[in-house]
Length: 244
Figure (spheres, rainbow, N blue to C red):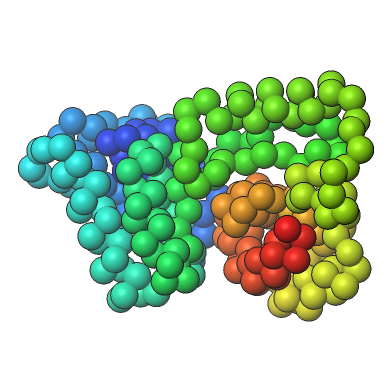
């Protein structure tokens, strides 16, 4: 089960981007208030045609962070009750990062992103893995990453100061020993042969689990990408430790 909690007061209509890719295994809970209760007709059609289950919670009282606290409280209730496989908070509000960190310490991964399916990343050279949404994203992080990539490409190559490569400078090729582990882990997902290379690149090129999830969701769509992520998450963690 994929669980999406939407802070509609924060993201409004754009938070539903990608709703057409949801399946019957997905649950979407929308928190809204009297200040943000309108939705476009086109989006209403998309929601009505989606096989996902929707729940709408209206915040009747007003006050600073009133919606945020209700969403966070309900999230804890659902984690204990339903034990969702993947949890997404749809918001731009970094205040939720404290909630994400709390559950991360209890091995519950929660991803904060600005829509159900994040926008595609900027086009980059083929040998550079795309930089996706990060857990604690600042407003200008995308432009900062793009500038960083451009500066790195323009700068002259310097000799390595250490025999150990960082993950950012390492080759995007995943060693065969790790590829074998990936193939075993995603066997039940019945991926096409050409899809394995997508997973390999996502694992070797991602800087964190949030980025890995986003790359897989973009490649395989929300439901299937979430399943693949769940199957390779531990492999990614092991690979990251050995690569650093």
